[in-house]
Image (cartoon, rainbow, N blue to C red; front, side):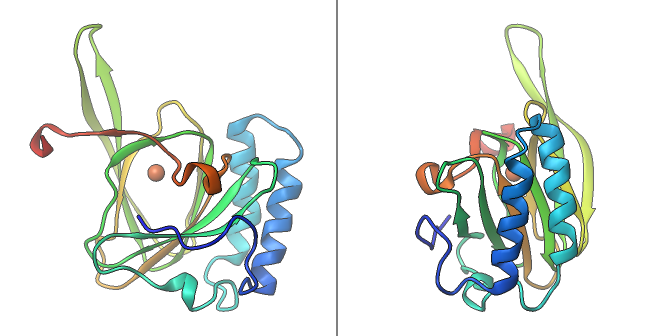
Amino acid sequence: MTTTAPRAVTAACTRRLRGLIEEIRETVDRGLPPDLTAYLVGERLAPHLGAPDLLTAEHCEGDPDRYRQHLLHAEADGSFSLVALVWLPGQQTSVHDHLSWCTTGVHAGEESERRYRLISDGRTARLVATEDVVNPQGTVCGFAPPGDIHRVSNSGTGKAISLHVYGADLARLGSSIRRVYRLPEER
Ligand SMILES: [Fe+2]
């Protein structure tokens, strides 16, 4: 992944994006449990999805080699971060889980998601796919670990862009990924 912004809101940040960051700050500052925070952040995110004045042209740029992460904002106290992920057709993540609660919203295009459970007998563990979901433009999802193993891909024919809010400091961590899981066919 490529990260392309300094820690704070950039000068190129749009007025609407600044407003969204303020709305997220108000929600996170309530100090509610992670799953509830993720849900409520989703309610603030949803009305902005698809708005043409939300992101700059730079924030919508992809990378032919891999899906691209644009860091839009990292809160000074590390309590949340906002990124735009840009996917060209066929690009996908690893199978992974997360360091913190997360809220996602599809801004453009559509994303496909395969969810997994880790089944363990105490000695060995294996991943079992439990659900395939297609998230069209406007879809909002909120979740908190554990039980958040998934892979996201752009299986459509056009560019896909999603906004992700994490309860973590991505300016410091670089990514929200806690652990990458290798499927047997990938080893
Ligand atoms: Fe993820």
